[in-house]
Length: 290
Image (cartoon, rainbow, N blue to C red; front, side, top):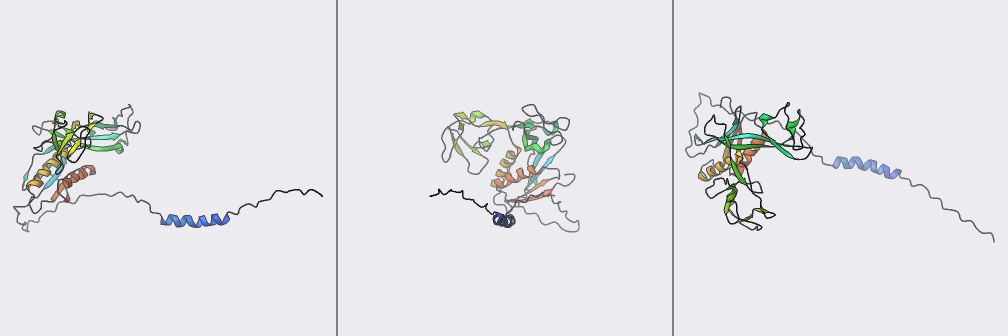
């Protein structure tokens, strides 16, 4: 009997045209259902202070009202924060503005006085490279306000130092004064921060309710560095809120600034005001000549 030869089966190529047609229909449907993040630039203009007409009678003053106002201002050399309440003003909080840049070359940060950097002298990174002279301001990561102690208006001022926790909170003692020495931060001592009911006992390697671990790897994690003017402001606002808690406008605050004030500064002041108990915040523009 003749041997039958086996022939290989021939497979037909798969017709993927229906699948491609289905994908052509699904892709537009999926895109139409997707939610994309919308980015927008908001141009903020502070409202002008309203002026009272001479023909109209001003409203009678409320002797119990706090009338709290915080103003951010600056001159050619440095800036200051001023607080008004009940028709009087507190001593100015003078500060020196400092800019912290993020270097892409080494991913490190550098801090400079903005008066010392410009197109001719751009900021220099830790690795020796300089930032783009035309775009270095876009590399600003943080605007610091270092508090100054001044004996007079002409005094250039001395930078105030404070001890900060590893969580970036300024320590204060039982009298609500800033802790200015690392020797005061040791296991067993009691300190607080600029927050309500924040008193805690310090320990090393131990953390519990009312106890703060101030060590990291067996070493003290607290640091002594320039005090923030925002923290000076928060300390005064907390004292005002506690003293005048019964005022009818005890939760109100007006923040005044000019159009040249960086938005970061406004946010910093608003954050401290809210943390101090002033939740009703109004913004106003500093009038010319103030």
